[in-house]
Image (cartoon, helix red, strand yellow):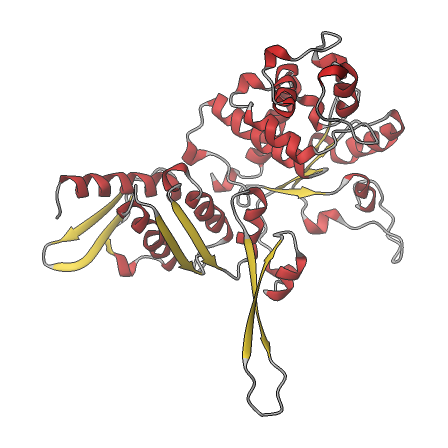
Length: 391
């Protein structure tokens, strides 16, 4: 049975696996004196020998228990195809679990053919992706030597999907989709959803899971005009892409931008109703509270917040309908500035880096602006309405 320390470790593991993978159900690992086979009980289900559990459950236990057994040690962990037997939602959950703080002393090495795991890596900066290709040397003989080429590649490289033979039919469909303009919109709204659920006091096990309850779709600005949100033309050559055939359960978010897009926004509102949200502000960055913006600027300027000098006091209303990059350039004292914040169009020069800094200071519901709270509530309600049968 082991000593007290080992029994406490097993107890912590049982609680961890129940909360993380089984929606808070109580999990018990039961050893037997007369057998080397562990019996497992999950919630109110019947006790079963571990080999009689589903392959996915066995895989999760096999991959996570050794981490607890060696907690506190510095280790290299090698796992071949961690996605085996796991549906896409569990693949995301497993990879996110490996990235948790309690496993920070481990360095993981995976081999994988999963496009779902590759997709998750887009959101995790600590992961590097390498491709492994085999090439045969030219030779006059019937037998050729094999060389293996290892390359550090971007996880956005479509050639990786081609190497893995991923077809459109391989894509996992979540219960609904949230359409956003770009990558930083996804980052901000993901954080808004988290903080809103914190505010509601929702237990971790009951929260909506990305790529299961919902997924994000990035439509890249003006490309929205190529979808049937706006154009019902059925002409074979010039008709818009039929979004209802792709995912009928969708929530579309657009920037306000300029008044010239008002007719488009009115048409979207008419066609989508409650499934459409147009920001009251210029872009998603304009939802940030002034104190968050000032903290980010202090980071860029490598100075204390109290040492920043602005040539005017400002509230969120001041920059609501202005490009935020140019606004910061205009209000920050020129003699103190170390970087330029606006691009040629006036928007934030490096939106991804700016968002990473901003999200660092958004840790509670009170850090969100009123519009961010309103948007989070609407997205939450939409996801809730489309997941009633899975809750």
